[in-house]
Length: 443
Ligand SMILES: Cc1ncc(COP(=O)(O)O)c(C=O)c1O
Image (cartoon, rainbow, N blue to C red):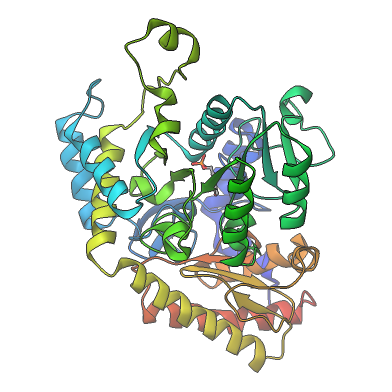
């Protein structure tokens, strides 16, 4: 019987061929770090609903879901027609549009903390602007960020505790205070340093909940602490926004952030990002009838593709559907069935591991735990150790051999188009995956 790796190579000759050209063209042979897979990644031709197909004709149940951007699955007819209609009317009109008004209305309707907003082209741009706004508004220079919480790839977002990051000036890194997600630490930093403008976080924990925080308690305590110190709270809802609840994590848990960053679902699966929140902070971008303000105090914000009409049309369509149809409920139900099935399979095959996660985000950890399967309370170093690359790479490859594509480190992002059928197919595949991994001594 071929090994997991041999089977992967056998099943993907077309992808292997393309990778040779890619290796000479793109660093690492990929165009996004998360797509880096050894010995080579797959090349995908198209997707529909919960499925996608590669150049070798292999079909996959897709749990990458456009890196979390797709809650309606691939090429949803409503999104396809909204975008096609807009393409026919112009891809960039160099002016305000009805579509951006419709998009803004849909966002405000779902997320009442958003009094005003500005649109960007990505989540990275959104978090960059949120930090700048917080600093400009408060007149303070530092921002607290939690270890491993991901906010994109700009110079501030990539800061890590205790070391420099290649290409990032020391002065930039030192304006970010990177601490463990521990409220005692937050309290200590905010009490000792009066130059903190804001705290930013992923509201279900690092990597969309792979390293969970104790919600909702952590969030409400953080809100109380930041407020008591006059420090702004930025909720980065790039993944959780409109996914874990129509109103995002803030809607699910009743938290009122000062600023929210959004991307992915907000743009209906097209490129886009948004910073929204308190009008007095967002208005740091506003022009005033005051030349001195405009020249010296205002935050400038050009951007060729800000509120691009294609993204606006797709985003508005997607968010209106979320507001009016049980989109989140469908995704959550499929994810709950998947999570239960994964946990049952771990038990039945007596393999150490469990699945946990909130709403339509499901994370597998190859280690036993007695958590409630929503918010895993295993210490983060243990979760990380269980997700060692030797295990998670084999897991991903073995799943792909069975026609299932999942996120790195064993996470599933479920859409409203995943049904019992796809979940059943995934669970059937999982039995084979675990058996093969066991045969190879990986688990
Ligand atoms: C929580 C979070 N913030 C920000 C970003 C950056 O968004 P983008 O990839 O659109 O730049 C991501 C991307 O995955 C994210 O997960």
